[in-house]
Length: 217
Image 1: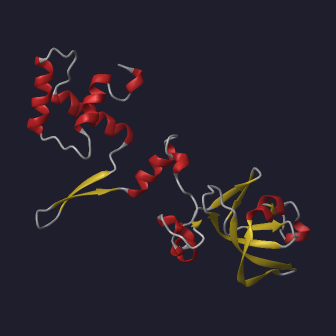
Image 2: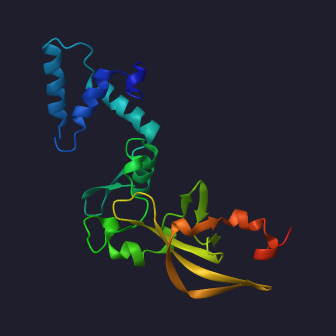
Image 3: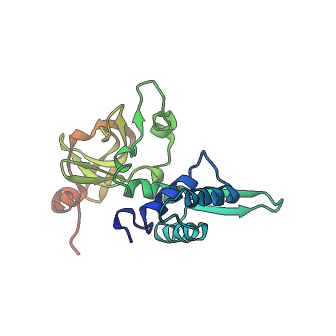
């Protein structure tokens, strides 16, 4: 077993599987057999059989799961459905692609070249589909949680958005809360503020029961 190409058993198997799996260069079963036979006749070493390649593919799928599901319609047509959630999870877990993922809707300043620049992403996307948190100065703020601003006001997180060409969010949509003895009065009007104005998280506010009206259990 070659650890450098795990979960493929060897570099030869990995390269061959990579060749036969090219999305824009489809190989039929007959073509795959012809290529492998040609490689053997040319004296190539350790050429895998088609059966060994299939077993290697099954092993890889068992390790990372195959996001593509084959579906046959009642008409007999065959479709392949990809799991979007699985694909996104792999992008986040891959250190080479993780930092290319756009977590937040981006303010294109009137221009739109990517889907995350669209006005619907900034204003009409359901809250439950938004990224739930933001990290600022090593503090984690979650949307729909209390926070305190540098101005001293309590606010309720709503959503975040990023400036163009900036990875981290720079603005957030907030609702002001006014604490009183029975709870909080929520301002129905939302405002847009820089996330740099965030000062205290919900966890921090819990330590100030007099300010926020929290009760001890």
